[in-house]
Length: 209
Image (cartoon, rainbow, N blue to C red; front, side, top):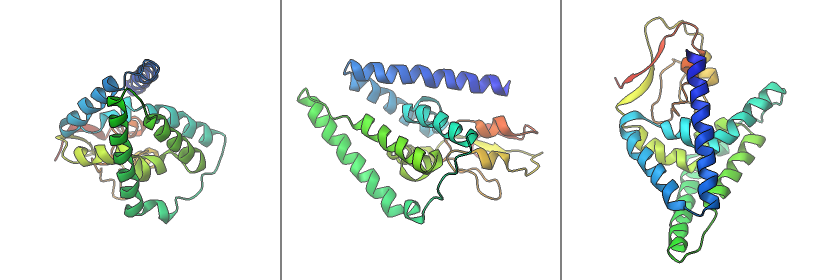
């Protein structure tokens, strides 16, 4: 059942990746912005499903990260420089400026390839470090969804029966699980890989406590 859920998730990811690139080719940015806005509002209630199930950047960098691990590539340690909130907020402000610039150009019938630019940075960060560096410290979309996701009425939690094997923490791409296995809903991507990794089915998606 768990593996089936992940197959469904990956199928949905691939579908939206096709939709994303199709809309880029058709120059229909407004529709994709509408999809993002819909999931942004939804994150107040259900969490960051956009990040784990829809985001085209995540869809592309996740398999790259898995391939690196299977081939035995050692990722560079995440430098404290990337963990600095100043860097994260500065990158987010640049993203907002770029987003406003894109909207202004769209009104003039022109375009600015902001989504592809961000995707390129995500790919570079994943190749040089790993996907966690991008998800947790750099992704501007993640920053935006973390602001709304912290108010989510639903979240992933550990339940009675947890054996503290920490498989969930080791696999979490959003670094949303601490040493005591507490789940931080604002950083949880809702990929549900933690649920899939749990050997005793002690992880549930439920109402926030």
